[in-house]
Image: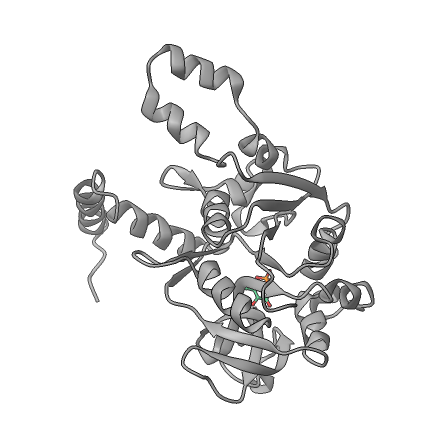
Length: 301
Ligand code: G1P
């Protein structure tokens, strides 16, 4: 990665089955689950655009037509809204993707793991540094730059790969990639080791990888040679462990709050947060929560 290379391309692995949200995910991809009125994927896309990306690569599968449809132009709907003078709604529909941004769709024919999904984007990414965003991890930095923008600034100045990390409870290490970092210089530090979903007793730390990566394109060659790892899948984490041997990879503690929208409670918390933060919904959302607590007799702790 040269020091001057901008991060222009972002990869969104969206081919997962979303089993935790069955039966909804029988027909609605989990990336299309709404946080109030915008689907999860929109937050991820907005973050990539905020970070300066203009090429968005969706790694999808044959069941996820609605993700492609969502980013396609909706001529009929736009015409109807225009005729009806619904300019605000028309804007919302048009703002899904700004004109300078293009969406590319790549199919992952078999669900062989996150590493394999990222590898599917190789022909589009080529040999420049690129971002990976896992839309399940929604990161909200209310008044500041998005997490990926913070990371892109670091990657563009250091020339290194950068991975977002966050402290998790020790008993949760088995749900994440876990990094070992000797020391942090303010918010970032060089990763010495990385391991996918270690048991708490084997974890090198409690510092977990969350779904934002800026990677050197050499990761593709490493992924091509990667054997199945945790869960029998081709793991991105394992290829990053190889990348560490040839190039510095930095862990970055971002500013912002992460909601794990791959879990029920994470999704619920994100919806509550965004509803309360929306002026027109704040009071109604608060009242609804108070009513629900009262009616169900749920005690405050
Ligand atoms: C993936 C990665 C893992 C990372 C996590 C972040 O796991 O493999 O290293 O910590 O995303 O959300 P998954 O949640 O897809 O099982």
